[in-house]
Length: 409
Image (cartoon, rainbow, N blue to C red; front, side, top):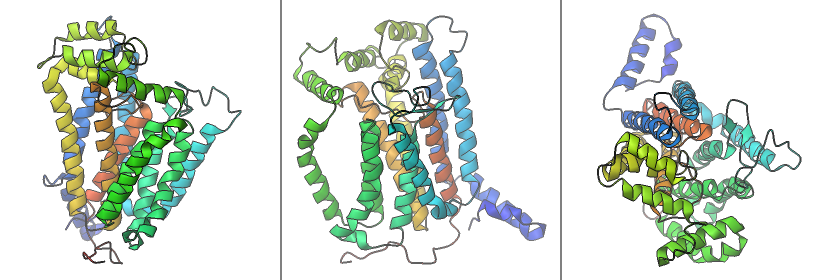
């Protein structure tokens, strides 16, 4: 059985043996976390090319400054992933609450009146970023990891979530950051926390019938929240309805972005088009946010339907590798961490691609590893580091019994 990298500190013959075992745990080809790493690298490289494709129409011999910045941020993300993968992930159980409080403090800071715009500058009406000089920090991205850590720490040795009343504490844990994100407003990021909650509850043994009832009730109550939405959020929904009905009246208004994205996807055909032609078409299409939220349509325009399928396949490999890691994990904290993190990547990819092809309203969700953005890229790679840390540390069962229940429990 593989031992953790923490044994490297020992010296002598036993220390050398531990180091060798740790190295074997990392490099063994059967380590499912390597699927996550390789898929992340491929997606990040595609992202860098896609950003340059979207931004650079002039001298393509020179990298665009935004592309260069994304490459630098990728280096930071890789470094962060290594730093997180090296120590034993289980120490995070002791500081999970502290991390969550810190992140909640950042979310509250975004909403404080009187904060100078040089520090918190609204974008598209949302106060979601803190200017750190080198890049803008988006606390809602950090909140994803914080929520997963707190939930995993709470659920790992409990059974009360097997009863309807026991689902309330996990819901409170998640809905506090959801409320703060909604006030920014950043409804897209807020909504990604809900699938993570359900995935982790399911992995921790919550009864499926309870979760199905909650989902059904939420789906029926969803229309009641429409009056509470911001005007631009209502406009996005109305625009999607107009698209479904085939109405063209909003094509040069609220529907300009999704209609343009769909046109680029369609123009790519099956095999895509040449680099020069794709750059020209993307440039003159005037697609808003083409290097961030709408980058999938840019890449499909270049590589066609086959390229779009390849991107979907890479996300499928990523999630498959993560779930394999969770499946072989014998320690509940690590298992729940991996399930929660994989749900974020899966949901973000599905929603973003659905936005680009016109089957979901534009909600401002990035395509993980691919879209331009420092917080999104770095946090995504931090997730990779955490999953890898879990994969190489399956040495002992927990001191207490984890969530294992019979059908009648």
